[in-house]
Amino acid sequence: MLIIPLILMIFSSSFVFGADQFEDYRCKCVCPSLTVLQDPLVNETHRHVYIDVVPADNCTCYRVVFNTVIATQNFQDRFCPRCVCNYEVRNTTTMKVVVIIIMVAISLLFIYMIFLLCLDPIMNQRTKPKPTTTTTQPIRQYERQ
Image 1 (cartoon, rainbow, N blue to C red):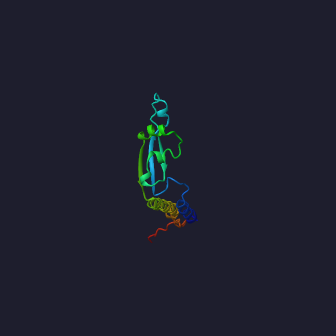
Image 2: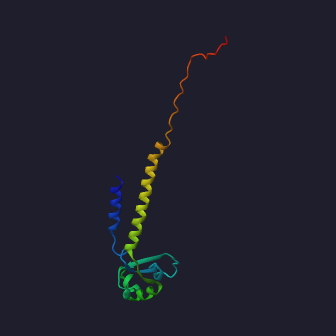
Image 3: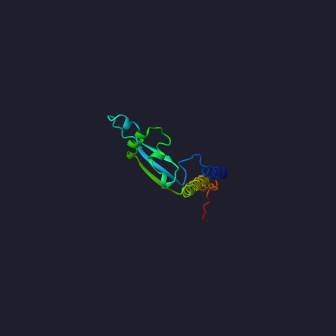
């Protein structure tokens, strides 16, 4: 009964419904808000993260950030020095395997808990003591004759 949800979890975790964030390599740029250059009086510390799948030699602010944001070349030249772009290589297959192992371990512990909950009433069932047979006959005392 619990095997079917376990199988569904394993198969559903193997399918990924994202494009850029779940590749084995990516370029990740952390930049300030775009309003920082437009208004110098704004003291905003909120950062934005831009992620794109590009080769290592194209991991630049111009390629990642302004691939999605339209801006003039002058604005790009003033904005990009404030960004930090890193090329990341990771093994998503290893991450998926670790997550599946953790899910299986938790499922096994859950099944074991259910087994113990079912076993507990059986083990704690006390045998009711059998009532001793009492006789209502008077005790005879031996008389000396």
